[in-house]
Image (cartoon, rainbow over all chains, first blue to last red; front, side, top):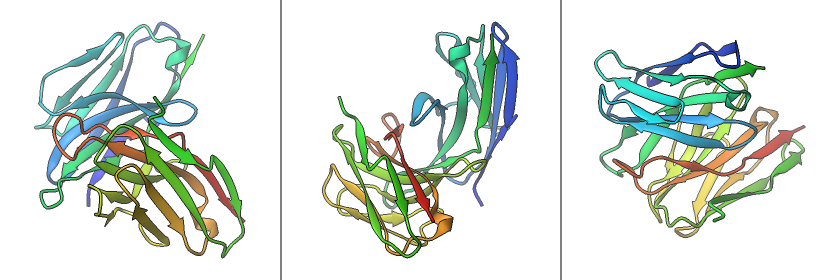
Length: 115
Length: 115
C-alpha cells in the first residue's frame, strides 16, 4: 500500500528560527514529490521534485529529494509569522495506462510561528 | 484568472439527501481530481479524470460518483449522504499526467456537513 509519512505532525517555533520538515514515502511507480502550503483554504503549490540531490529554492524555502532513501525535506530559514500553515507533502505515481498522475498525500505538518 | 472554481463553498445535508458538487477550471488542464480532507488524514483521492471522457476511482470512492462533463467541468455526486462524508472537499486540476506541468492546482474547497 502506498504510504507518505510526514514529521513532525506539529511544530511551534519563534520567528527567525529555521525549520526542517520531513517527508518519507513508499510508493510504487514513483514519478515526483510535491510540497504544498495550506493556510486557510486551498493548498498552494510550492515545489515539485523529480531528481535526487537537486535542491529547489524559492526565497527562504528550499527542498531536496533523496530517491535512494525515499525522503524529502523542506527547509524554511528566517521564519516569519506568515509561514504559519499546514505543509503537505504529496507523491505522484505515474500510471502508464491512462497517464494520469495520482497524488498520495501525507498527513501534513502544522507549523506555527510565534512572534 | 479564476483557476479552479468550486461551488458551493458550504453545505449542510441531512442523512440520505443527495447533492452535486460542481468544479470548473479555466486553465485548459487535461486532468481533474476530487479529494476529501479530514483532520489528521491529509488529502485523500476520491475520483480522478485523466482526460475528457475518462474517470477512475481513487483511494476512497465508495458513496460517490463523478461526471467529467467536458474538459472544463468535473462534478462529484453524493447519492445518499452519510455522516461519514462530513469533510472538506477539494477539486484540483493539472495540465497532464507526468513530467513538468503535473502539479495540481486546487479550488477553495467545499465544507460539507451531514447531520
